[in-house]
Image 1 (cartoon, rainbow, N blue to C red):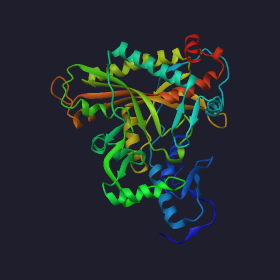
Image 2 (tube, one colour):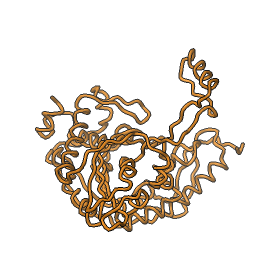
Image 3 (cartoon, one colour):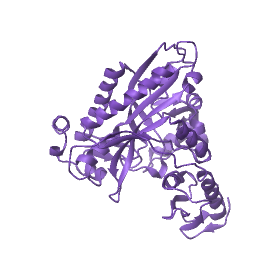
Image 4 (cartoon, rainbow, N blue to C red):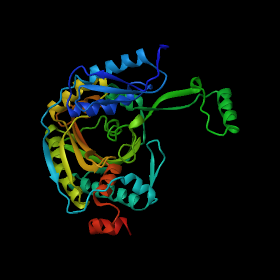
Length: 403
């Protein structure tokens, strides 16, 4: 490691080119994955430079090299694509949006934040989460005759590799490990923790990673289960999935969790069937937003890919218009309105059909698509837009969650 260290907490770097607000936001959010010595990279108001916020003792040459390579990769993103809005709903509630919802839920005892991207909830929060999931599931069953499924929270690394996740989002993966099957290693770990005040982890060379991961995308476990199937026209599957995405220092209450729940819908079959399924998802989201009386929109979007592949993959997604996001307005910490991505509607082409040998009628690889709704984000959005007074909520919802 370079021994030349920096005592100052930050350094300013010019950007290789001016960027727009979309790229600036991506630079700031993904900067937590640049170096353990970088707390965050903040883009200037004129979007021509950045402040690299460093931790004391950072090896300056090493860290700046990584920061510069990161910025060079991120500014290659082509932005400015027209954002198409396919649906917009307006709430009936005339009250103001509510700030600090996470803190308000905690103070009422309805939410417990463990501080590492995991939350526990009860009372109206739990009832609302269950109601959102149940309502969406019923809409999927009514519209698509979707088959109920259940999938495990763990997923094999080989499946994630086949899904392309390691190439696109390697920073978000969580690998599972266990103490090696060795008598002395296990005894050493046991004895270390038998009299310690805090938890002591096993030595790194005593941890075995056997190729299991926590599932980072709700739809992934479905595709191996459909391997070898012939879809004929097509079919749909739905379930409540447990999802895990490592977010580093971006973790923030219900806004951005490490572990969360997604009501998932996967449709597979012919191209015409899959595109028809995506079109049917718009009125479903509209009905869901109306049920909970939410301002909401569906618009074109792209995923937050890892820096070195972000430019190419974002360009392809935007150009093909294969991803739409469900955006619901909430308030940030400063009280400004921001559009929170509370779900997505995606087309995959024949990618998963080819990778997992899922066939359509004529023997060709099936097309697939999916709709995912982030339950905790819908909860956050609903409390932001209606607050904690039951009188502001739709009557049917209030009677169920505040009873």
